[in-house]
Image (cartoon, rainbow, N blue to C red; front, side):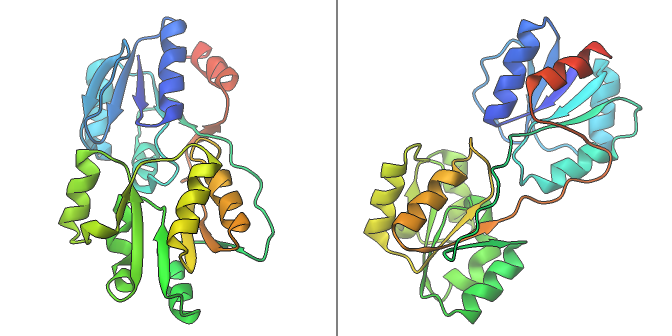
Amino acid sequence: MVLLLGGTTEAKQVAAFLEKAGCSYIYSTRTQVDFEGKGKYCFGGLNGAQMEVLCMNEGVKMIVDACHPFAKELHQTVASVNLNIPLIRYQRAIPIRITHPLIEYVEDYEEVLLKLEQRKFASLLALSGVQSIPLLKKYWAKHKTWFRILDRNHSKELASKYNFPEEFLIYGMPQEIKEELALFWKLKPDVILTKESGLNGKSDTKIAAAIECNIQIMVLKIPMLPVGLQVMNDLEQLQQAISGV
């Protein structure tokens, strides 16, 4: 039995792989999603102790963390599990960082706020997700800011909870550069904020569109993973790990 922590494209790939390999698994997400796989599904946040209890009760022999790269708290929770079982971090490959005068890589939201203030940017298009709204309130409370979020009830409820003005919300997750270009040209923000989320997160597309529109873009670096997780980027590596359990 494998505990697969999901909610991403990578997690769906792992689920399909496990099914093909005839391996039983539990698919766990923090919030409820439509899950059509053959594994057992559960949702809700888990702390380290709860995760250990779940693993012991279900006979879990391996944990695969395939959550979003920025789910820092969850990565730390997985790393804290003390059951003498493999703790795998399965993640998308991250493109090589680009050197360009319009691109700046930043460590965290504190650095983002500092640079927004220092450079006196008057407007921001944040492609950093609904959960970044409260982290950037110091800026958007005083300056024009748009947030693009997923078009689903949970995201809309969070935005409302954070008291962000609905008229500055943009919904959806464009897949093509032409869609990004249309949005960037329409809004013409002073600066764009996105996350270093890899190919599936379309960070390369957002960066390319910003450059074409001659707009400054700040890219949040993927957080460092905690010690204790074995990182894998392809299913062949995962196959070898599973065969050894």
